[in-house]
Amino acid sequence: MSKEFKIGLITVIAGGLLYYGFNFLRGSDLFSPSNRYYATYANVSGLNVSNPIYFNGLPVGRVSGFELVQNKGYIVVALDIDEGLMIGKDASATLANDGLFGGKAIVLNVGVAQEKAQPGDTLASDMDKGMQDEIGTVTDNLNSTIVKINTLLDSLNQTDVKGTVGAVKETVESMNRKIADLDLKGPIENVDQLVISFRARSEELEGVIASSQTLMDSLNQLPVSASLEKLNESMDHINNLLEAVQSDEGTVGKLLNSDSIYNNLNKLLVDMDELIIHFNNYPKDFMKPLGRKHHKLKGVSQEEGSED
Image (tube, rainbow, N blue to C red; front, side, top):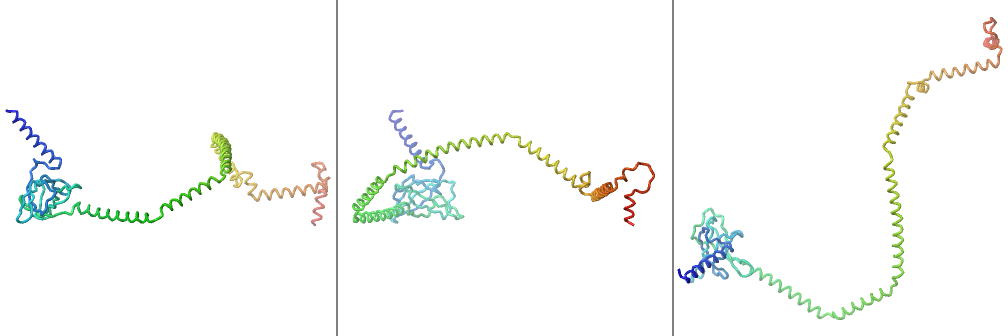
């Protein structure tokens, strides 16, 4: 095998690999089975062989060739579309822009008809307005904006901008002079004194807070719970005592609640009072010997006589 043949073979293989890799990067697989369909357009400017065919944004094929039908004024475009894609009889192929740099692509609409298109059929074709019309709209808006900016600049040129700027400058300088004339030294010194006084008060307040914290810690350490429990027990004893006094049970309760004891005590006091009166009036009745027979006591007989 000669050296020239080897170089030619390597060149062909490299070219084939380059072509396959280029189409692979564009989304076309040369070894995938495909069906060929056709579409006709009056103008295919920007459309080239191997340009992609999209269905819902997904590459499903590529443009494989062109044929000029001069007597009818249109161009037949061969479309190689993946064999697994079901295409109806009402399918259409729209020539549209692919990017901002003038590239073209075919946008496929598979249709909704139940009858399927057969390989070799000519699909309905359409032309999309694409990016050119959109760019034209943007250009028109940009031109309108530029015209408005120019009008604004012309109005500014007719205005005494220099005089306005000079007036603003004089106003600013006057304000600066007014500020410089103000004696701010005294108020600033007063503010400094106020800040110093505030710091001193803050230190005193910190001492008070620290003392309060110490007091709270001391209070927290006191056996408050035990004291409260003892207080509760004492209150229970007092309540029980008061209930016992209010009831008829016990001496104190009976003394407070029973009328008979009050009546007996009252009668006893009356009897003692009468006895003392009798003793004062007739002491001899209490001095006579015990056991001697005698007449009724003088004081008693007089009382009986007085009753008669």
